[in-house]
Length: 432
Image (cartoon, rainbow, N blue to C red; front, side, top):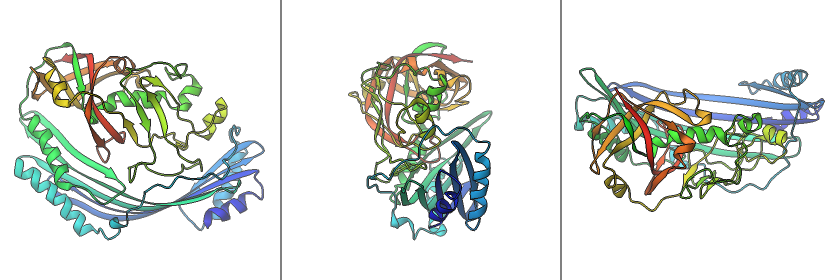
C-alpha cells in the first residue's frame, strides 16, 4: 500500500507520520435550459501527508501516486516552519461496521443517467412548458486509505449518488428558481418524487401575495432550517470554541434551546451522504449528541483543537465537518402547525445566508423562496421580503416541531440530515 510506503519513508526522519490516499472516479450529466449541457467522466487521486518533526507539524499533498519521495520530503521541509504539535496521532481503534458502498451503482452508465435527468425535466415541462428546466445526475466511486506511525491502518470503499431537478420560470420582471435533489451512497432513488417535489415548489409559488412588515410566526421547512443550523454548526466547532469566538463556549451542559429540541450527529446511518467509520485523521467516528432536550452536550474537535483544550477528538476530521444530522421529531402535525397560524411565513430558501455575523447567530437575509400563511393555509409566494433575527434566540423560542421529517441532502443542501418543520414564535419580517 502506498500509504504504508509513505509512513516508512517519513519515519526515517520524523517522530510521527500519517498518510491518506483517495482514489475517485466520477461520472456526471448536467442539463440546463431544457438541454443536455454536459456528460463527463473524471478520475482523481489525492495523497495527503502529515509529519511531526521535533514537535512541529508539516503537511504536504500530491495528485501523483508516483511522487512518494517528493510528497514526504515536502512535508518534512514544511515541518521546519510548522506549528507546534499539540496532539499525538491516534492508536489503532475498533471501527464500527457501516454501509457505504452500493454495488448497484457500478453498472449505472451515462445513457441511463441522461434518461433519468430527461425524465425529471419532462415531468417539470409537462406541468408548465414555460419553465426552463434543468437537472443533474452524479455518480462517484471512491476508496479512502489511512495509515499512521502508531500502527493504525484503515481503508473503506464508498459510492455516492446525487440527483436533482428544478428550473427557472420568468414572468415579466419576476424570476423564480425552484428545485429538489437527493444525495446518498445508494442507487435506489425515486426520480419521479424528486420532480414532483420540484413541481410542488413551483405550484405553491404561482401566486405572488403581499405581506406586511412586522413580527410574526415563521415556519422553517426542513430545507429552510439552514438559517438556524449554520450558526449552530459554527458555534459548536471546536476551533471557534478554542479561539473564544463561539457564543456557546461557556454553555456546555446548559439549556440553550427549547426542551423539545434534540440534535444528534450520526455518522452510521446506512448509506447516508456523509456516513463513514473513520475520519481523515484516523479517528473512529461515533454518534455525537449536540443538543439533548435543549441542553448543549458536545463540541466538535479535530486532533489539533482537541489537543489544545486537552480533550478528545470527536471523529470529524481536520475540517470538523458534521456528518448526518438528525433532529428528533416533535408532537405536532405539520398541517396542524399551519392551521394554528393566522398570519405568518413558511420559508424554504434564502439569498445571502452566511453574510453578516452568523457565528453570533445574527441573520438578516432575503427570502429566496418563501410563502405567506394566512388563516391556516399557504396562500402564495412572497417577494422582496427580508427575515431577521438571532438563531440562538430563535431556538429558545420554538413554538412547535413537526412529527414529519424529511431527508435533506444532495445538490441543494448545505447540511445533510433528517429534519422536521420547526415553528418559531416570532421573527422580524421586512417587506419592500
